[in-house]
Amino acid sequence: MNYRHDYHAGNFADVFKHIVLARVIAYLKNKDKAFRVSDIHGGAGRYRLPPASDRDHRGNPPEWVSGIGRLAGWTPGAETLALIRPYLDCVFGEGVAATETPGTYPGSPLIAMTLMRGQDRLSAYELHPEAAARLKALFAGNHRARIIELDGWLAPGAHLPPKEKRGLLLADPPFEEAADFDRMVAALVTTTRRWQGGVQAYWYPLKHAERVRRFKRALAETEISDLIAIELEIDRAAQPPKLHGCGMILRRAPYSLEAEMRQLLPELTPRLASAPGRGAWRIERLSTE
View 1 (cartoon, rainbow, N blue to C red):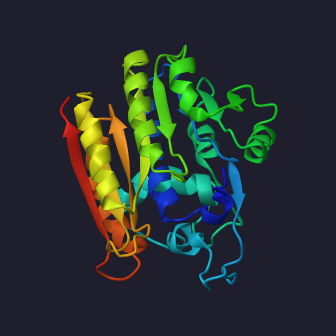
View 2: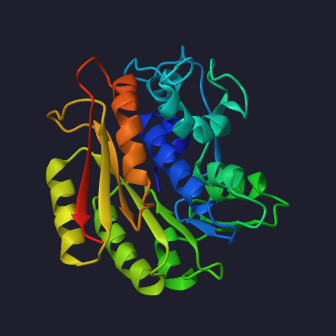
């Protein structure tokens, strides 16, 4: 695996993905019964953010500058702020005014653990040895976290359902290969068969439009119920293709999530857009309940 998330940490895709993650966890916490988050592409768990003045070989600043950096000092409407506050607390610190970008950014496993309660559990999978070692060190001594050095795509068939019965499976692969779209469809089928009651969330890039269309057709052909797609674009599609947005497919999404996204995305999208008028968002139901 060549992908290094340190380079991308805190970018617009992380902001979008982690806000959705935080809202799903908030919903799961509405019931006292314990739940488990299974993050099948856990990464290293925490990432150092390089100085904003750094430049890559193309002269571009770090990706976090146009991601979480855009949220520092941002004051959205009261309803939107209430919805994203749990996420902001994970990044900037609880009760801290989000005015300056911190030096590190939390990955999905750390955000999940920060938001969960004492009775809830985390299983995080990571195949890359260096990232897995960092993830294990981050959660060393935490009895609520299980870190597994394993190809996360094997998790749905091997480790589901969890004993808690309630919870979330999160998949956000690096998409070094187009085959990750096919792997997500297979994971959806396996997870649905083994864990009917679980919430599922699959992150994907908006870069190659035809690949995304084929992916959605493949999802429809599974005839699995209750699928929704939520997408955010920060720029217009271009040639040659470049990452201009991302989306999440959810199965059994919290009943409140669509309304929450319709509240916050109209404010979040222009904040993350590459230029005025270039952002867009959409919510698409792929199958009925």
